[in-house]
Amino acid sequence: MKKHSIAFLFVLYYLPAFNWILNGWATSPLDKFSYLFAGLAMLLLTLRFYKNRASSQLSIKVLNILLAIYLMVEIAAFSPDINIMRSTNLIYFVATIIYAKFGKQQTITCIPLLVILFLSLPTVSFMINRLLSPFTATNINTAFITKLTLSTALILC
Image (cartoon, rainbow, N blue to C red):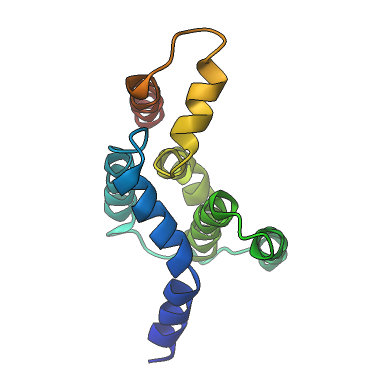
């Protein structure tokens, strides 16, 4: 029961970020298909850890440092309510949980999947288009093709 209440509080705390993500996917023409990247990343993460056992080797010192970084970023994102920062920090927290449960090696191997999850966030398409605009004519498809290329490269690594 205690684990479920902590998970419920966690989801409740991140409800505005989830709302922002869903709203971005629904209303932004740039992020119209970004949910595909989130689904792909979550499916691959689930398959990766479905039968894995928890690691017995855990560095409490490293875990404390990771959680301290998480809390500092969360405090920085809280007062101005920066949704992209809070959402990125959520992905970082997922990485911290993977580290705590499965160890350093499994966390390192999950970084490409977490980057794909980051690519699914709203405004990432805008950032990609902004970054590529000096080099190429950008449109709605540019960010999607760039995300698809990066995701494919990350999965093949």
